[in-house]
Length: 240
Image (cartoon, rainbow, N blue to C red; front, side):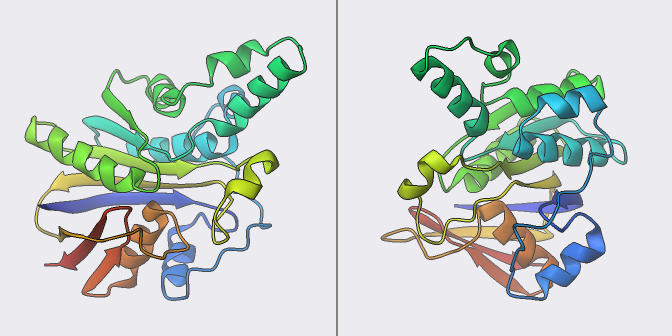
């Protein structure tokens, strides 16, 4: 499989990193994160909306709105491996303890909560999609972006994000799992700036970063080629 994109604009947020220059410095390092560092305050989200969103969703919506304040966007694709896991765990805990459910938790627990709140906050009725495909959520979202380009949507905003994983699930996580809120937003056009070609792999490659962050590290590093490990495919990128 082959496809190519132009990256028109980008925005990202994680503990201790929010400004473009901070991310560029990070891209020249071993991609270490200080997960105890504070998250940047929301700049584009209304305060009441920010309070309603879980950690990863808040970063995702704020990054999306930042790009939408600078650039025209024709469609949205949000990708998250765990979605609203923080909120769903609270719901499951309340049910197990026979407690009343929070109406906010219930209403905001669906996987497309973040992309829905983005269109509401931006006041734009955009075509949108929400993707979850395990470790490959970012890569599969790229295929969704390519399909939207093929359907005639010129500029598609892809946002890859995740929030904190509740402690209850920690024994089931891989040893190298990165447990922190983050969001990577990429405004993509069909083009030839970055070309991707996939190759089969027998098992998931070793990588200590979610694919969205791994892509951002490779993209900002200015290396001529970089690769993302996947569950069944390797995703090799080259610049033109």
